[in-house]
Length: 553
Image (cartoon, rainbow, N blue to C red; front, side):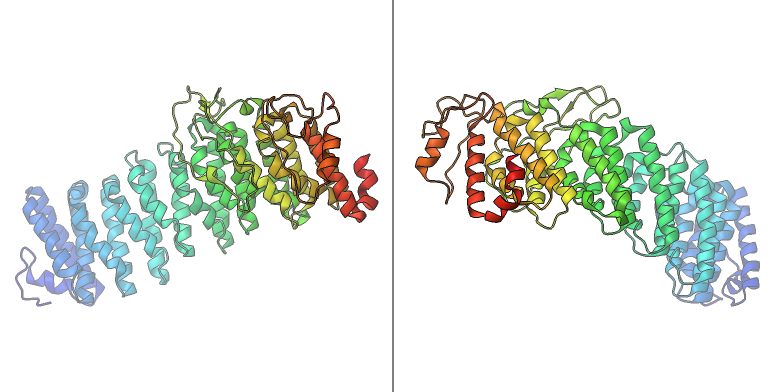
């Protein structure tokens, strides 16, 4: 820079000193600038104050010459000190050139930028909060700086900013959340540590309700929980633990439905800590939110059922998953069988600890088995009216049955999972028999195949379920829709057709069996079961020899 250039009100001597390579000379120049600005403050000469800041910014801090940039930084800090409480009026002009220097290739310059911004923020205190996002953005980058001196300087500035946020009631959380949501997905360990430290600070401030915005950052928190650093994992555990405590204390203000999908995803994580933590959250959500979680049952079961067959190496996850499974099953009630897709959803009293109101239309299956899981309930938007309203929930039985069918059909699935599936199906036939019988034709083949299972306990549960299906009044065919073979079955609320299967007994023998008078407790599925069982015994001699007596007994 040409030191002789007219940069008044800065004197040529001050200009030369600001561009000197020696820190001490730049410091002397900064003291002169401070004195000059104080005079302008006393005179209330705002135009000259702005002019000085503009010169220090454009001609020095943003200069191409490193020493000039260093001089500009210390000069801007001196201006802030001279302005005192009035510095808030000029913060944009003071902060922006300093933040630009955060990206400088010279580590010494980045350090001086930290030092300058520290002095600016220290003077302005709460006045910097309207500029919090740009400060946070800059600090989040310096948190991962490779130079230890720069990192140390940024940590001092970070602590100062945290103190200011903690003591102020003017923090704009709404404006900050989009930036936090973006930065929480950083893969850099230092940046993650920085993010978690800020979340912990914001959680600790009584006037800041971060819980309202938890759905925005929960996924990112679970991803950070999988970090390779034990320290970061521990910090993230603490943050999640604090959120869960707050959820338990104030469940009525929690947006359970908005976070259900996130938990479903992380309950299936390969990382044990992530999976266990997500499963613990799911357990609390089901118990606290009650039937609000019911529309997400298919997704929850997809995550929970495989865990029931874990061995002792994952005992903790298995135990929590079992509680989730049992709690979710209890949410299905007989009234769910009365809800019909052609009628308005049944209204039930809201859970005492929840204020959400959910509504999900029921889909009707065609009775055909499907190969892919349909978890459409997982991605539905929900609204949250006041707690005095009543929760409207329709059980998405189609999605649940598809998940259960999938897990029962998977030969690699563990025994405890198969047992849990059969218990679920039995429970659904007890609580919602009318709707379940729409799925019976598609479920029947896999239930018959399950009789060949290696586990006696699985076969017993299967037989218990088949007995319920065969004896349920809901399985009776309606009058006027009886099978054409003249079978004598009592009328019931649901029309069922028992289609002929390839390779079944001859039509004459089938007709002979089904013409037998129906007992008061048996429906057409009893005869269908007996026919198919005899057929399996005939085609699978090993099954007859090894399990025949066990099944018949």
